[in-house]
Image (cartoon, rainbow, N blue to C red; front, side):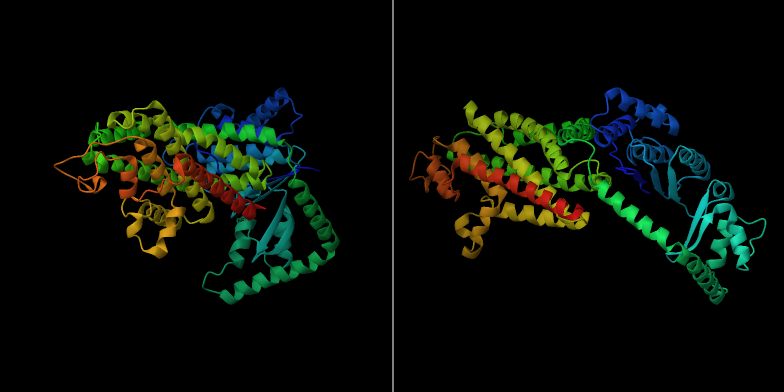
Length: 515
């Protein structure tokens, strides 16, 4: 009886950049057995899409408020199609007509009725169905204040009401009539309460005769719950399918021309401000400034990108985990795998332009080392943002936490305030500042082994007022309070530890909440 129950949730949650066909293909890959051949899987997809009338929109993106896609009725059919792929014996639908106009709702309910004739039990909740829709139901379960008032053939509900002295007029829809007699309208609250009590009490008498059946049903539910926790596909298949889906979802983001223009424009603006800085003492503040700006910008950007992206995935993740589509570990690993090339594309493009136009250290190995450091810094910031997004469910609060976290990291980054001017009790905080490690590594990598000529007209602290010429890398590090004890490699390793720690912490929180 494995995977015999499917639930169609009220909200139709999907990744909006995927097409209908891609969404169904992912569901088939993760929820249909590994031993099913590709041909059988395609046949199953074809049968389901044909039965629900969505075969004509397979290449249409799902879309959202900002991007035109499929209609509300088509989204609902897609939601049902995803659950029908496993050919469940029991199909539960939570208010499938919610948000649909009467024509679309009627068409959808007729299709749902057809599904109930295909050797499966279909249970759906509806609010105030019209007369046509009411006639589609075989059995009716009516709840008042969470208690059963009627359960039986839908066509017999009028007779049941008659037996209680609540005769339903011939022109009334029985569902509407029952809602009317139990609803407080302000004119006769005592009468409405009396009717509600009468309906509940009378059904309790009927319910006592079905106690054994109820216990059997409870045992069945427990059985389904136990079996539902099992997976039909292997770890490898889930991982590959999740990587494909994650890449396709991000595909729409990274291919946006506006993002490309934004980052290229920023790179040229930065390059024009710091264009071809000289190797002199007077240029040192500018040289350090370009490193710190780059570190700050690529700290904020990926952090907030992660914070805004997770809420869009949360509902889909919860739905998929509830249906045992895949393991949480596979989701986390696939997400990390796809994010690495996506997250480093724009910062790498930015850095290629800035590095050579600004005229930083001309040794090619220094360029590649600085690119690696910047990449790890971006991944660390993205990991911290992902951790905050998972930890704090409220988006506004998450933004506040991220802002405070990033500002604190900037203040202890070593550029605004040198370490020797920071109050002694606060100095240890610099060791938990990702910006400090990234900034230090970039500076050390650039100036190591390089001397800068003094400026007699404008002597600075780097040459100790013009008395120490030429200015060496040690002089710059000392004047800037940059600790080079760890070296570039040590700083990069610690940044990578930030990546691992916050990704594992985010996974731990997700696992705790979903298991």
